[in-house]
Length: 139
Image 1 (cartoon, rainbow, N blue to C red):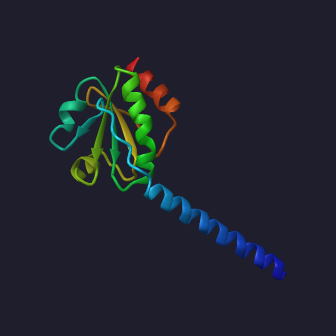
Image 2: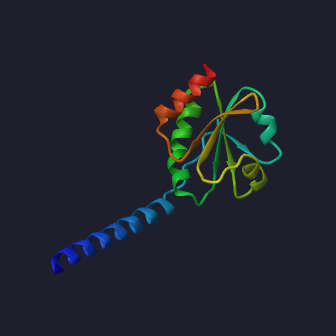
Image 3: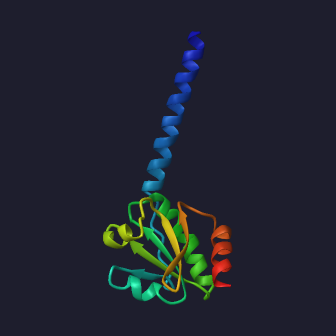
């Protein structure tokens, strides 16, 4: 019975250790330089950029580890296709826009077509999945 308790205790300590390690690693991940093809939005430019064509907006924050993980994927998509505009909106600096679109978790990516939300992605998604969804809308 005691060995079982020790085993469970060791397992719990191990999981806590892994959680702390990965949390620290994500939080301190280096920032990825944003592609020049990605537009940086704010409350004033949001409507103008999203109202025409297909636009994927990444709602992010600089302290968000998963946001840092998706950044290279968005850079690649921006460099590879002209069928969609990739844009980023810092939710810390533009809270009214994030509130309007009910962004509660980040990263959240919203795909707009002519100013109307057509698809929403929450969390880190693989490039292949994002491209498939984007191309279904953009053609």
